[in-house]
Length: 492
Image 1: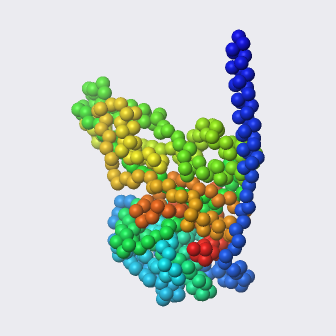
Image 2: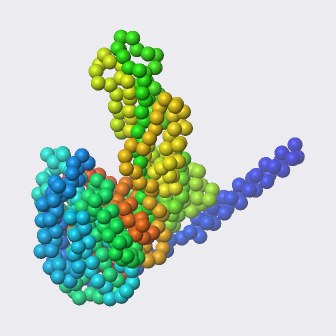
């Protein structure tokens, strides 16, 4: 009996010490200053007014170019004339860039624009893409998705948030940098792909190959991704700028069952459709392991000091609270996707006639891979879960491993973080994982420093318009992004 009392006593002491340690760590983990000294001289009211007026007008004009990525069509041939017209429009709209920068057309349609700096440091590479997703629901838009309509200081149009805002934002910033005769220390390279929405195989991949063949040294890459997120991170009152250090990989797996078909009047006890249905049921009830690893772990650890006390204690003590945090995150669709490899059945095929038992059945399962989960290992795990040698699993189409996780410090990251603090007041900057795809996945051999962030403010309202209806951008929102890029250029 005494032994049990001693055990409980020691357990109580251990629990008490653990709680004390958690409280101490929570209160030691205090917020730091979110300010950064401005590098760019403050624009006059006249300059800011002119910037707000003309920059959004240019973005509006850019959205009228129908460069649309269709999965089932030859995008190069469909968009050929429009892409060349857009190239010419860029040169006409930005005459200083046309005169002073080096322009190259890669693989007939993508653009590589080099603005030489004063030093011999490796260049900073900024990515953007000229193509957009289709707008099949255009009748539901307030204004036509390719009309470039500006109403009450708001532009409505496909590409206003994905991704012509980045292309035009960078060009506006570079043109104004030249107009103000601001010095550029590091060479800036703008790589504008033409097929990001269909994988970037002909655009970004060709540019990456060109850069490597020319042995052009790249210090870091900045691409689209997260922005300044408003009211999205739980427990955080401040705006939160998330810099994506990695993005998920992807693979689609084809499951196929072949069985003897025949007349539906005398079916076999098990046929192709029933076998694959049972397999898919097993798969749907399986979840890949959750990870609280970088860069996701870094997001919570670095945001913790700015959260309310409850969340601060939770995220400041991941050494003991990680299982609880993972359990909470697994409860939501989007949050669950940030901590594990996900899978979903997207295509089912079987049968051609109502009274014929199909001789085969197929399913396509799409997976988005958490960094560290390899395609070969995921395929083996799917086969293990199915546990049925009648179901043959194979890679269905082109796939990509998750990109390496870039460092959350050093050249590129530090300057982006400082520019955010200088231009977005009281904004917390944290690393993160991008669960969708960007052109960065095609540049893994160019540099190991790839940062996914756009200097635009996002809330639940405008996030839903990306790839949806009524995509929009406001004058002040866009002008703020242009000033951010100008400031960032000066920090490099």
